[in-house]
Image 1 (spheres, protein in one colour):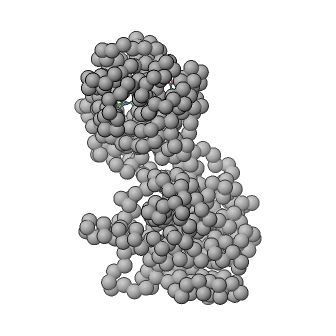
Image 2: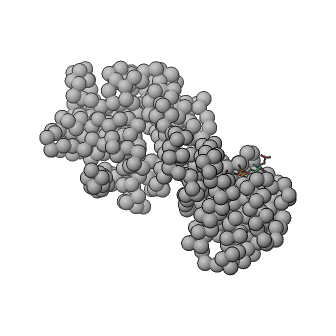
Image 3: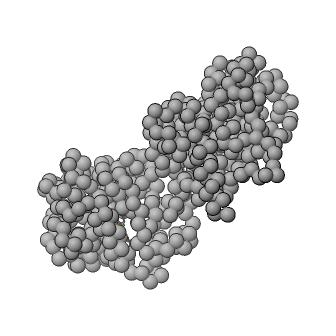
Length: 487
Ligand SMILES: NC(=O)C1=CN([C@@H]2O[C@H](COP(=O)(O)OP(=O)(O)OC[C@H]3O[C@@H](n4cnc5c(N)ncnc54)[C@H](OP(=O)(O)O)[C@@H]3O)[C@@H](O)[C@H]2O)[C@@H](O)CC1
Ligand SMILES: [K+]
């Protein structure tokens, strides 16, 4: 259930299922029943208005209305347009609805305790305007509870963008698998609780259409974790070089702490000589080396991974150092200043990437590096990953991780308090630590985001960046115990 389907893939899954012998009206009935079950699970009987659009999302509405009425609920139904204009499965379910069909209007919302939004689903094709926009505004300003069917009307299922206006739901019930718009902002904010319900489309059908996007979950990457073996030693767990700034030392101290907590065997902070005492005194397990020893350090292949950027400083020196590191084709995480140093010349960065590389920009850094890449976050991350042949992770509440081959994952853990100074440095450290242990860059980026978010969720409000590395052992232990159960 971790796959995320585009609306086209969902239509294809429907089509294949119908071809395989389950008629479309049965799928619609199953969809209606799934929403009905969620409604009666969440609410006791009350007055309901079901608002139906002109397509199959509206068709779902007729099925839901009938099930609720058969259950004894007081149900009104409003339709956009004429019932005679409905087609296919929607027309079939409209014919089965025995109640009155009113014209869609704000009067249906006023006085209802619960509104079921079946105006537009996957077929939303343009901005909502005019009377329907007014209706949506009435729904959003009304005290009633709102259930959205498939997606809140106005949210583009593929992008999470709001087309004109969108219904703000308390619960969204979608079918088979989630769509990108359920997890990407601002769509995610309009969904409320998300329920993903089976309507009879098999897992094999979903696999056959080869989805390339997933909700970020251990299922995706747990097989790629390099748990240490009894026979191993610290050199088997990698040796990460974290490049530290001369003055902004806090950032790389967080990188170092997070990398070590993620399990890296050895960690050396490389910085200007005058800053080394600060790094060395931060933790007894930190090793340090002066920047003047750079050549000797990188000539030693045991130094198999690099993190550079946090607190490092923006400029030509940083740019030159990053290019030298990328030339070595070892696991590399580029964050913050390492990215911004290429703002004037982003193509140089993209051409230089050869080895396993993860770029971890926030939205501002992304816009500086890729000013010509527009669109939703998923499509931008994929375009940048392809252009740079690197894993690109765009940070935010809806963090997206994309691989150059088009695979992508979206983080779906809500942790608003992760938006705090130093949090991104910790993330870079975790990913660097995992890559140093031999994990594939896309997997390491996904796992890093997950560990970071899970730790943040466990810590709760009041979190400061320093807390996150200290919580990693608990989350890692949970993963490790789960992996032993599976074995
Ligand atoms: N068997 C299946 O496939 C199953 C499908 N299922 C359900 O079907 C839903 C998809 O149905 P769908 O494709 O009919 O699209 P839907 O969202 O109802 O809207 C299309 C209509 O809206 C109109 N329209 C669009 N934008 C507009 C705007 N801004 N302003 C005004 N009008 C606008 C558009 O008009 P047109 O663009 O053609 O002019 C067209 O008339 C899916 O979300 C799920 O709920 C489930 O039952 C499971 C089985
Ligand atoms: K809807």
